[in-house]
Amino acid sequence: MQQTCAKPRKVGRREKGQAARNAAYDREYRDLGALITYSGLCRRTLWSLISDQADPLPASKVRGKWLVRRRDFDAYL
Image 1: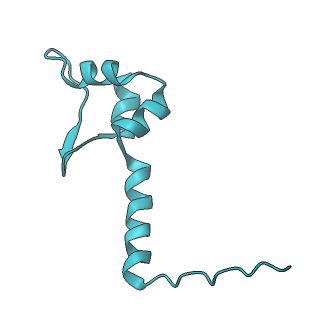
Image 2: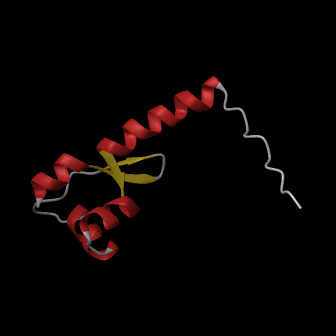
């Protein structure tokens, strides 16, 4: 018995543009989940680095998500 494969869904121009923007965005900025994977640090440690009063890790909150620029994180450590 042969299995039939479903036709691949057609992707519109808007979705293609959004995917390209997300790819560029992911390369430069990382959210806390991606930063945990990238750095190997735990969430609590990252929060303490961001909220440090004397020398905080540069981060921005965009649409409810904390973002850290990868090069800023590398320079910070």
